[in-house]
Amino acid sequence: MRIEEIPLGANIEIEVRFCGRSMSFNSEVVSLHNDSIFINPITVNERTIGFNDKCRINLIVKTDGKVFLWENVDVKLIRFDGNIYHKITMQGDGKPYNRREAYRMYIGEDMPIYINTASGPYLINVLVKDISETGVGFITKEDLDIDRMIRLKVKDFNNIIPLTGVIVRKEYLSHLDSYLYGCKFNEKSDKLGKFIARKQGELLRKRLNTYSSPIVLKKSKKK
Image (cartoon, rainbow, N blue to C red; front, side, top):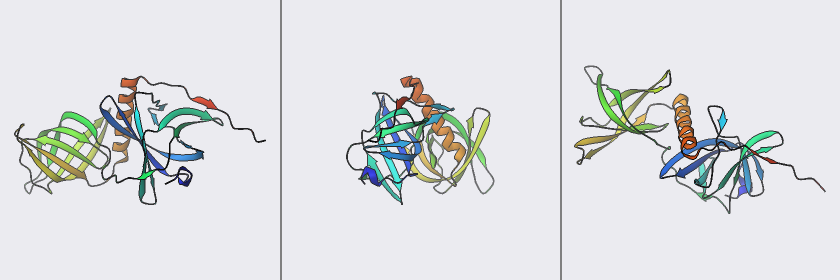
């Protein structure tokens, strides 16, 4: 895909890698400018996020059921025509990209989950490995069946995000004498998506301390 073929309003995803970590942010295309696109600013807690040279950033554009990738793009926070955007500058054409799974955020915390059985639900404590908008991975010594229904609650400040899913993968970890399970959520939760985005933004700001002010761009004068 050429840059000029990116439709306005297209959904985009920014993959950010730094210090051995990876995270993802979503936005949409507002306008095209030569080898750059302007997107709605990425914000967390009503504050825009800045990116510095420590970040390696890829751009993923999703349109008409297809996905395209631009690697090593440059992202700057700008002010243009009175509005704030993130400006993404790319080189060359986007390559077709096979993105199978949603971004998974590392958790590494103990959490209680409920397992549905014929005699009713029962509670077990597990180590939640990671979570995404589509599923969760956890580790436990319990030997559970594939297709077993599970329920868990993610705490976001004073709010509780209830989630239900089904076990779709199971792997025995001999070094831990435990099982790693992969679960798929029954439905998408907007609250969970916002929770993951906020956590990523907080981590990025904590690690990079990026509170940059937008660069002011002026419209080019017509001759």
